[in-house]
Length: 472
Image (cartoon, rainbow, N blue to C red; front, side, top):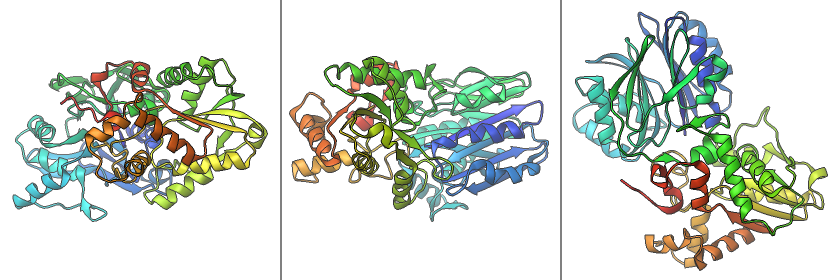
């Protein structure tokens, strides 16, 4: 996942873009960047932040941007952004969030037209540069944005900074959010609405799925009408979203409380001393579970954050595993001899969870009951950079299914039986997972309960990772 922030103001907006972008750092990052138009020229800065924080890297650059009244920033988990280009449409900068599933196909088409790519990301095509090329090949920004929406398979939301203002274009099916805000001097657009609060902006509305708007300091102009269909990523509420953010008018933390309470409904006969969350995204689910069951919530795991970032941030898997191991510390005073229900957002590879269970056993815990806030991840994501770098061969659930079936040829018919929480194969799969992870009990959220906890109709949510569903 990635996140972006844009601002157009009658006053200098450098500080707002700087802090607004920084408020997206929780989304995980490999690189970050900002671009401004200062009234005369575009100024851009990009840094790697794999081993440093956004503020530390970019604060020395701020004097270069002084006086700018328009700017965009991005936290990117893949390629270098923003891309700034000079075209027949004029000079512009662009940032993107999403995943282009047909990237290689589209890039081959560009090369066949005798065009070239100037910027690389780890010796591969830069997806944001491709988007810039697709826009620049058209006679207007509106036509260029439509060109991107029509050609990209997967998802792509973008901000385009021009000399006149900012285009904010949400993915064709709205899988990722864009929220609009305003104050007395201008307008902002962002992935996370929580970035508005401390900067003094009030939320105006969500950009709808497939919609494009144009922001100036004086207002918001509709450029492309919304799509009739949308499928918002359900993982925004389960995991990615910041607790104080809203997507589609639904608060992330409240959704997690409902999610935990729904799991608690199926656990009425389980005795536990208290509930606990795996920091950070498991905490809201655990509080909801605690309230639903009427049992205490306690912090038996604490996270050491001063020098250990979020575990998915480093691109090297060994480093991710090391970060996950080092950052969570069990509190032996609260674990020794206790029966505890733990809430976590998901199980992807299983490595981090198994390491944490080992820590708990070593700290003297009596029983470990694990509750997962979403159904088992069976299908790799084609729409966002969530489980794509971890192919189906890396997903813990798929490894278990391959072992149970004795084959790597897992057809949709076979997999559908494992995504049905009432089927014998599903129950056997969960039991094998429980045994492998050395848990006392293991239970996943039911898909219908997850949908109800979020509060949108099933057809407006992307649940592909869980059930392979696709409405369009």
